[in-house]
Length: 237
Image (cartoon, rainbow, N blue to C red):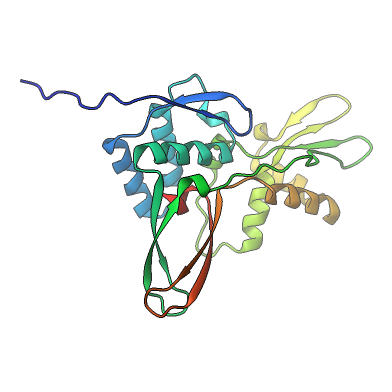
């Protein structure tokens, strides 16, 4: 006799932050959680994103293209799904900055914020002939980038994030989409910008919404007061 399939999972709804659309989803199950945990233990960013992609692909029940959602949409959806799957609070282990003792901290998921800035300039007149259009990267773009190397500097990370925000270039004759262009040409284009223009792109990239939460706790070992700023879905799993 075959074993029965257990636990008919309920459906939930949420509002996609970037579009305001309603998305339906179910909680993830043990088989999906196992894949997520294995990816997190690897500490490889690409593996983690692929595991999240696989989980959302089977758990999102409405007709949404996961790849086209913004990265902060993915973080928000995953957080809501995690709350319905595992519990409405996240238990984290944080080290004391002074004595390095482990401290067990519980964070209510409802306290984690995702704020979207308003009135950001998404078009930049780089010459009289060209207008550069910016957009925060979608999930597909984030999955396709290489995992950061240990020796990668902060400047390299900032530059890579800025490249991801290049959406299109308006010319007198056409609209050129950067996603269709080779990496070498995109980097050459970026190198031709003025410092002021480049800084505008950096500012836009830095304003991309992200899950964030400030944590304060007194170390259970040495009573030192600690402050942490948690960012991104990996910090809350």
